[in-house]
Image 1: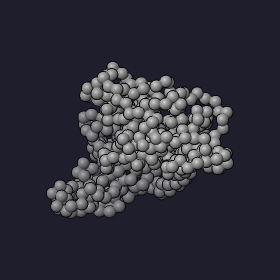
Image 2: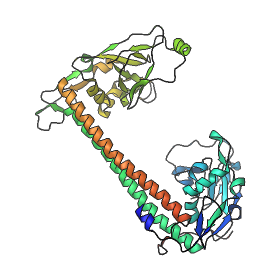
Image 3: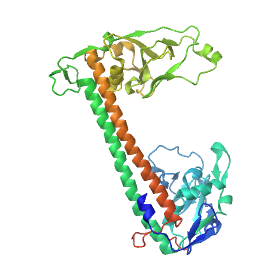
Image 4: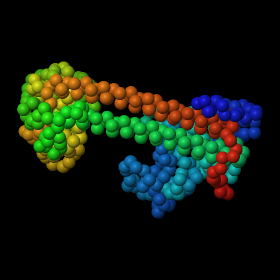
Length: 441
């Protein structure tokens, strides 16, 4: 933010006449959008490239979009033709601004296509203006509909005033923002990469802790189990059936609190079922769980969906509930069960149809019990859990610092764009790049 505060301003400003722009440089104009852009609707071009309107990438071919998108099944003759350099008003423009088109093609007739009327409008400058938070605030005044039906009415938006710097200023602003936003995006990407490295390091340390311990000087021996490898000489390897005993008690009334298993959270109250009559009807014969027991989701054991019960209640009949041996520290084994290495063994031991994520594969208790795991003394299990918690806390603190830095970079980027496109700062004039004019229209 310090760099932004020290950037030069224009010599003189004037009132733009609208709140979202505020004061603009003396030499700039402010003209209603209807004189600059027109709503176009060219159809019957079904052979053109099918495009997607996205908030992150703009208007691009569907093959450029990473996430899966539903392909249209109707007649493409009704789709609108849009050219590179045009803008689209999307169904979510009130959240993310207008989308710049990077490729000729066709888009859903639900979108509005805007084409520039004036030659002196530079695509690159308006690409930044239409995605700026300042302009997005102006879009809020043109919303029609409520809740999920919100959309931008161009009939309303066309009366909004848009700033028009001279062509040299438009070029300088666009080139400046190209350079600066690229630098900011690179800095954000580096911080995000560092976050991923921290997460990877944490996972490696945790895996080592629960399978080999953290004392590198202790004598080691072969565990005899491929996925485990070597373990400390004083550790044992045992089958899970010697440590966990399944229990199967059922409710007769369904009146107890219902719990569900969630990734990373464990066993939590299932708030969706609150009406007593519904509970009485549907929860009879659900499994009763007691505080201190371990609960496993049979269908999702391979991705570590286990939890410790901290209170009595009910769980799904498809869960497995285990009493644990006195030699077991529950937190140690919950950590062990969430390891991808052991998750692979759970998946291989599951039975049923399809894949583990399809919902048809289940890890039954007999198969679960036959699996071999490393087994340190309970006192060491407890010590390792404390060290693992320290590692998690340290890692999360570091990740929090990186996230805070990323948010500051994003905030700076937003403020920088707003300030540049509305003339609140004067950008250097000697940054070279290729901002394109619109062709003759």
